[in-house]
Length: 84
Image 1 (spheres, one colour):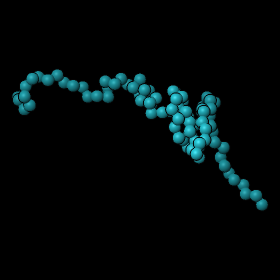
Image 2 (tube, rainbow, N blue to C red; image 1 turned 180 degrees about the vertical axis):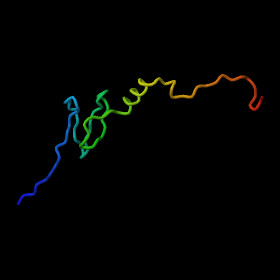
Image 3 (cartoon, rainbow, N blue to C red; image 1 turned 30 degrees about the horizontal axis):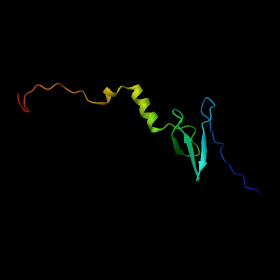
């Protein structure tokens, strides 16, 4: 008797039907970043697409300006600390 294996078919394309470049080396799957297509990242077999850390930083900075990440600086009055 043969054993039936219920392996779920893995989806390797994104919602638009595009399949991203990947390859296997030393038992690990590597994928290219989907934005810059320059950086290879080690991923699981179920991964459809990947974004590298550099593209993530660029995208987050484009959504919110750098000034919003830092506290606003009050102008100094010139008096010593504790002066009322």
